Image (cartoon, rainbow, N blue to C red; front, side):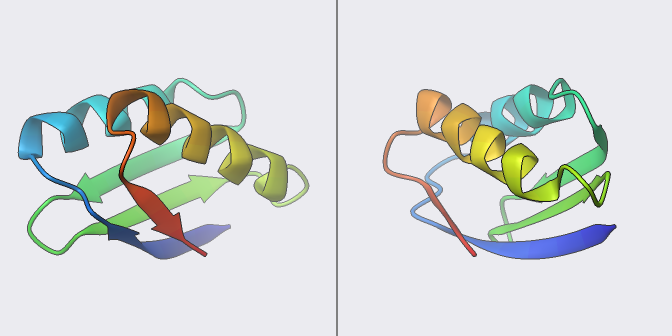
Length: 72
């Protein structure tokens, strides 16, 4: 399943790249991209684990950019 999410308070392109890299390492994630310009996250992951993957993705984003939120 592939879904898009809006990001709030993403401050720099370097942080976006770090967050994207961290999300791609989560087991079950097939692909992830973060666009700093549009402030959007696109994530492709297993349907059965999607909710838990999104929780892990939110935690990974918070480690890199504590103010950034994934609007679900």
